[in-house]
Every structure is written in structure tokens, then in C-alpha cells.
Image 1 (cartoon, rainbow, N blue to C red):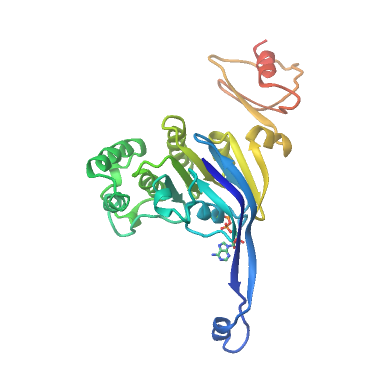
Image 2: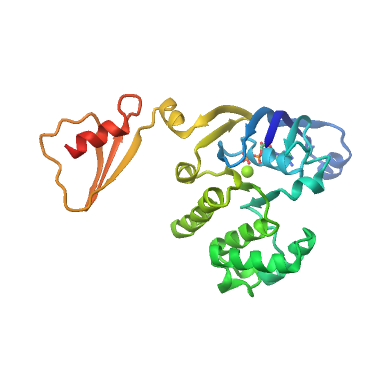
Length: 300
Ligand code: ADP
Ligand code: MG
């Protein structure tokens, strides 16, 4: 459904001159330095997948997403979405895509939120009745009603993110590219966004590629993660295997219906990291121990 082949993007930035008239000399200069933001990235994403795209700052995540959406042209390599190139068949491809850049709203800053939706619906040629019905659904799912009449600049960050997500969904795309949609949000706002994304994927079957700094986002949402570093893919696989590979323990949270006690002389092949009323948190190495074994020990 999404196929990325040997994708590269090299940026050329003018070398800044120093000294007298530096500004003008930089402007007239023909010397550039090259930055390989993305080099040789390949992957496929199938329909219905929820994929995390993670990596440190400057790794090339946003640049990849911009090439996937057709905003940037690759230096070389190819992107195909439903067999079409986002660069060559922009109009047909964008009908399939919903895009959110957490760092930048796609809504009109000074307009009430609902006016932005009207403009976007017209831009995407969504029929009026369809747009109204869809907005009604999104209003409920994302709790938009309280701020539909508010100009975007007056929204809290959490509200703005919800507003942007709704905007991305207005034309009912089947694929979502989300670049840091939880950046800067507090715990409550994050939870609400995650709930919505989970529903989009599980109930509405949307295919989602998500970049984030937040490992909790990934753990709660993505079966598969792709790690990019210095423009190259370092890992593509399940979150469990990634944990094993970097030596992180797997956390198990066990909820008890009533009070429980941990025997003092318990000899356990795992670590107890939290003991609260009705909730026991354990850490274990999945290579050495299966979740079912842990449950058997705990229940005995
Ligand atoms: P990420 O989203 O993973 O933080 P980006 O894709 O934004 O990383 O950036 C990757 C690299 O490319 C960074 O070194 C960044 O400075 C550089 N870069 C991004 N956009 C441009 C641009 N328009 N011009 C020059 N360099 C850029
Ligand atoms: Mg980025």
C-alpha cells in the first residue's frame, strides 16, 4: 500500500560567509554545503498497520514524511502510495492522505476552527452534506464542540492538536501521516489523542505512520517500529524485539480483583518494580521468561 524504495534527500544550504558584507556575499556566493537528511530508506507498509517512526532529533523523520506526502521531492529513490507517486500524482494521492504536523497547524490562525473546516472541505471537494456528517462524528470523537467558534490562535495546544486531527480526517483518508502529534502535550491531552488514534486504527481501519519522541505513544499504539538514525534505518520490527535488542525489560502490570500480598520469601525470576493497591508491576526479560510463565507463578 505504501512502498518506499531507496529514498534519499540531500539539502543544499549556502555556506555563510563571514566578515564585511557577509550577508550580501552569502547571497551571491555559489558555495553550498550538503546535508544528507535521508539516505537510502526503504520500507513497505500494509493496509491497517500502525507503525511508529522514531529516532533522535535531526534523524530525518520529518523529511521522510514530507517526501511521503509529496511536499518535498526526493533527491533519488521512489515513494508509491496505492501505486502512485505523491510527487507526480499529487492530487490523486492527497485524497488518500491525512497529515498532521504537530509543530505547525494547517488551520488558519485567526479564523474560528469551523471556518477552517469549511475551507478544507471545499479544497478537498467534500460534498456539503458529507462534510457536515463527518464533522459531526469527529466533533464527538475529539470533543471539538467547546472550541469550534474559537480562533485557532486562542486554543490550548491539546485543543489545537485535536482540531488539526479532525482537519486531517475531513476528507476521510485511509492513510494518516502524523509527525509528532503529541509533542508538548500534558498527560491528559496525550491520553485523549492516543485514544483517538487507537480508535482510528482499530475501529476505522486507518493505516497510520506516527513519529514521536514519546516511547509511551509507541508502546501503547504501535505493533511495529522503524528506527531511523542519521538518515538511515537502524531497525524495523516489533516493539518486543526492539526491547530485547536494546536490553530493556518488559513490564507486566497485573491487576488484582481484591487485596493481595507478596510472600516475603518469594524467589522470583523477575523483578517487582511497583506494588500498589490491586496493582502489581513486574519487570522481566522476555527472552528468559514468557508472560504466561509469570502469570502462572503469580497465580500460584
Ligand atoms: P527529524 O524530523 O528527525 O528531527 P528532519 O527530517 O527535520 O529531522 O531533519 C533531518 C536533517 O535535515 C537535520 O539535520 C536538519 O537540520 C536537516 N534539514 C531539514 N530540513 C532542511 C532544509 N529545508 N534545509 C536544510 N537542511 C534541512
Ligand atoms: Mg521532525
